[in-house]
Image 1 (cartoon, rainbow, N blue to C red):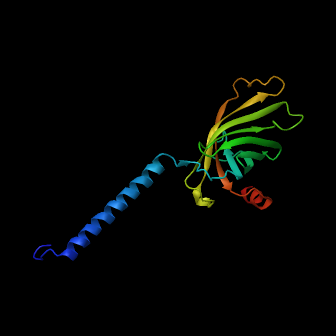
Image 2: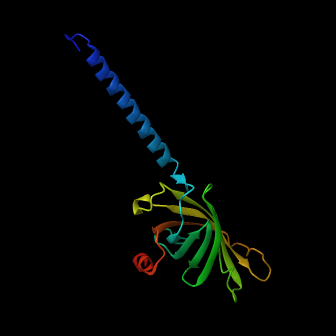
Image 3: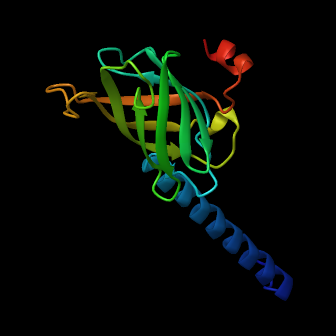
Length: 173
């Protein structure tokens, strides 16, 4: 402010600019930290219902499994691969779920069990939220309850739709 006298109005304006600049930097830092940490765990009101497209090795570029989940009171029901009944539990406070395909189904000799963690960028149901889950799965022999040796593997999934109706199923293909 060369050649100008400092006035109360000028000092207030400079102080406000400094405050706004600091607030913008702080909020930007918070966004960067959340993005760097890979999002946030599921918020207490985050619902995991919907159609999830899973990527299981050896495929890492295209989905090869489909979960249709309904989350009612943190109890998961639905289908896996359209053929097997899916059951499980979900903890919104940790984002962790345990899922089982075939556990509530007669005539199944082997179940598929998962332990996964859901991650949401927000509690919004908008597609831009891009919720994901990742974890591991293994097979269990129903007659013995034993884990099939060598059957544990990693997997990840993206939610294609927060709805689990026929229209959403057709959209997610």
